[in-house]
Length: 406
Ligand code: CTP
Image (tube, rainbow, N blue to C red; front, side, top):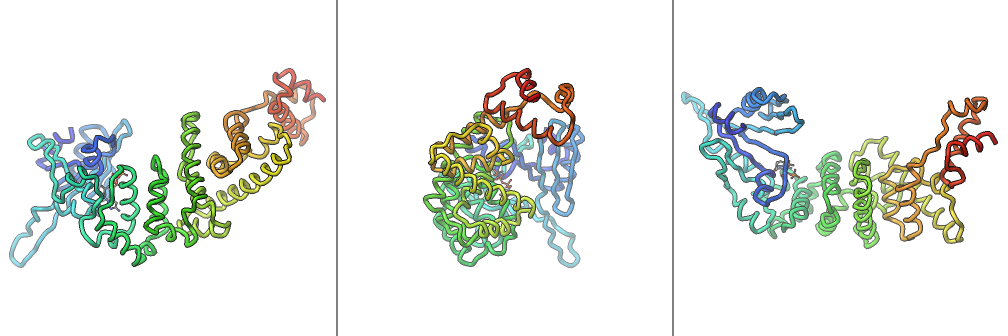
């Protein structure tokens, strides 16, 4: 249908970028990016009308997003049409505009275009040797100033290399090193830095990318004290194991993977350093103080639990519940990843798998029906009932009623 709209308007339309790269690699990619040689917004509007979708367009950039009724999205860009004016001559459109458009991209593997018009359907345009680099599994920039122009590409190079099991080309790696020597990342705003880090930490297995970041000397740009010590590596490996475990069990419980890895990565930072790192990444103040408070509480908790377990004290379920209640899943998983104490890890997993779901049966109305006068003691009774549930002292509503009357 896209091709047909292009045919009807007489506009050449290409699938470009990551979609084509992944197509050639046989990797699933549902993000289709199109480049239209000509007015992409016009194309997007026509296509949306034919399919019953909506268009959001950004005329200044010549881009548009089509949102179809099934929720799928399509990014449409226009090749920049360049006009060369000289006196007395009509403006002429530069012919190689697709080439120009692709030349502005980060790596050769992202510069392939596939035509989707019917007359040239499936024809690959490859100006910069992208196919060969895909075959040879190489991440390569198009020109020497690439990382200076856009320093976030350093992170992207690492992300693609690790995700696709490619290799950054030696010359490209040298360009990264010299860009970092020039401290280009200091010019990158916190939010952009943060976005790139989150993208990396949300990859399926981020440890390889973090190792590479450490090797190339990127971590100090997040915080001067940030290193990948054996301890940190261990915490990250454990995080990966726990996140896999958690996802298998609780597919539908939202859990921000990057937060678990970020905490693991920062685990050797002192409290003030941790806050500095968050600030460098422009994390929202409220979020930082929350994460900070939770991290702090989790670490104190860890100490307390370890001490009690060492004294061979048995912990009741209600105590375990009180220890962990109110901590977000991300912090709990971090706690479990960080500890070297198997018993502590078992407690966290007991809380995640069983205790956090446990409820008492009686509510306020039920207490009223028992003839108990409403008041502040209600919450005390409620807590007592939940504790009794947790500690298996009661198992039925009837037993809860008996306990409530006491
Ligand atoms: N791009 C770039 N420089 C950047 C970001 C993006 O040149 N700093 C280009 C890349 O060529 C990329 C395209 O813009 O192919 C689209 O960006 P994005 O969607 O981030 O890239 P994908 O290749 O689709 O990556 P992913 O598979 O992670 O979605």
